[in-house]
Each structure stands twice: as structure tokens, then as C-alpha cells.
Length: 216
Image 1 (tube, rainbow, N blue to C red):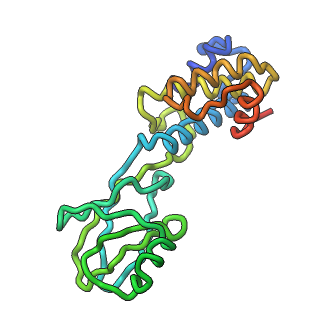
Image 2: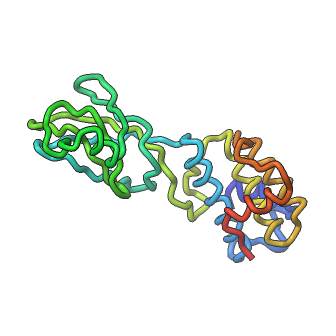
Image 3: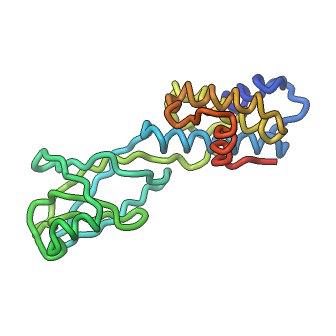
């Protein structure tokens, strides 16, 4: 049991050192761990706070590339930097690129644009005629779920309480305690700085809360 899981147990009234209901081999603890993982992934996706630099070594006459991180999921590209020319590339969707320049798939030269095609794949335009250009893609990552007490928690320290609050909110929601579920949902949104996504009425809050994967 890690520190985040112990914090959840404290907030729901369980003794983290000797829990009555949630033990290491209990399915209840697995549900709490799943809620924390969901919260961590959502926080990283919405805030872009967990990033990694992924080098893309361009090849001659090649426009399409795959980015396939090993230990995390790819969220979205924050920035692409041309190390050789010390210049940022401009983001562009494939449709917009085609409207902007219908011949872009046939043009070569110094890369100026990048964009998504499908999951993990991007295009570079124009494409180079020579080898050796290195692009540095700064990517917002989505951590893969942790599965053991010793796994690294890949979320900023100041967001850890937010992850705990969302897990507590889901716990109370699964037990039909709407008041405490909404209370901890509000705490999650406040700590994470996501109050702009928070609806104004109780009815809207319940509808919004349905976005989360609620557990029995």
C-alpha cells in the first residue's frame, strides 16, 4: 500500500495500518488503486504536467513517423524543436495542411510543419532530402497504471492530493453518498486548478460526474 492509498483510507475512515475492510489482497483496495490511477491519468492529460522529450531522427524522403513510448502512453505533442536550425515547427492538422498546400506531400526542404495523422503517428512537412536532422518533440505523457507499492507515481507532487480526493469522491459515489462525493469532487477540481470545468448547479455536477468511470 503506497502513501496515496493510505491517504484515501484515512479520509474514508479506515485505519491505514490495520484496515478492517481494505487490505492488500482485497478487491476494495484494487478499486481504490484503480481510482487513483484514473485520477493520475486525467490530471496528466488535462494539465500537460508530465512531459518527456522524444527525439525524432528524420530520414531522407520520409514524411511520416511513429512515436511509440515504452513506459507511458502518448497524450499529445506540446512542442517540436528543430535542434539543427534552432527553430520551432508549426502545428497543423493534415486537413489544414492539405488546404494550405495541396502539394505538401511532394515537397521537400527544411521541415516547417508537423501534425497528427492517427494514434502515435505524425507527419513532417516539407520532408528533408538528406539524413541527420533531429527534431525534439516535447510530449505530454499519460502514465501507464501503477500496479505495485514500489512503482513510481508519475504525477507532480502538488497534484497528489487531487488524485486522492478524486478517489475518495468515487468511493462515496459508489456507495450512494452524493453529498460527500460532490464535496471531494470539488476539492479535486480546486487543488488541480480545474474549476473552469465545473458546472454551476448540482444537477449539472451529477451529469458531469457521470464522465468518470464509477465503480460498484
